[in-house]
Image (cartoon, rainbow, N blue to C red):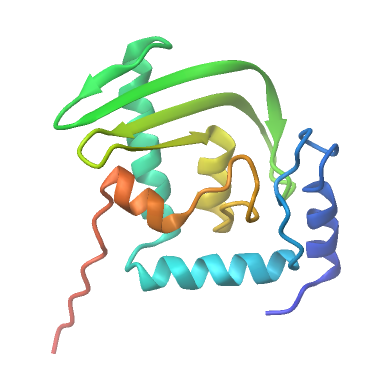
Length: 160
């Protein structure tokens, strides 16, 4: 895949000060297309899909909503907090709609690790396979998501 003019425009919207103060790319200097290709390959090596990851993120968010802004325990060993921050954000890819600034924190007490992700993270992973650039405040590492959220690998079955 090659970086297109449309990708250049999207990448400009991801820079600091355009949609968010810090942007979506962190210190990552690569072309957007290269970021997408690398993360897609990583997700495939993990035997996952972007949609499977996003679905698990949504599942934890929905459970965490019951805590009304406070951490709640979710069996077997998770704590989840969903909190709303004032404002909404558009998708830098230009998708219709505006996403509320909602942060979901998931703590996996078995491994003493946590992750914080936004509604926009969920959308960008689901729709674009975009986990943000390296060093970005809300960069989501697919391997860490798999480990912390306990996402099961896709099982392939072959019929002969």
